[in-house]
Image (cartoon, rainbow, N blue to C red):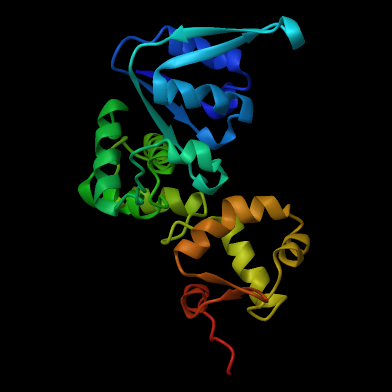
Length: 253
């Protein structure tokens, strides 16, 4: 298997070595495939359909095409923005799967396995608590684990208990839903300044002194998934679950 990412492939010359050097039945995995340029996409068309690459040498009337045969391979593309893929490229994938987020139990298993790699012991309830605060994302769960490992090493004997995990999360300001300071600031701004909404993204961003892209890409997806915020044609609005989490009464209708 060969691994690469969309940003690493900016020109056909970056892709050709992967394909021409691939063994038969090998797997080429492209992460963030939506970020590859259009010129690279065109090289993938013939590679995926006919197992060949057409290289154009020269320009104008002196241009000539060289056909390079490649061995049969499997291409796997991963993306969180499939809508940004061009239709011709997307249609050439026979199988398309949508992956769901990890459950707390699955993340807890990942935490336990990585705890062994870090040579630290962790209680079952502590592993489950860390997974519950990790936004259903293994990368975040691993970061939480490393932080708690350091905390347990400095504050105790290195063994991670539930109390130590909760204390470490409190020091990092990660609450029981996995929200951090910026998430809560977003909710409190929408509540305090805009009365719970509706409010536009740019208005919220300017009030928070943050970039709108930061809020839409980093903050809002998790808040929307947790049903703390909804998007309406008029703007963002807090839900009853958000009021409950902030421990305030919702406004009377």
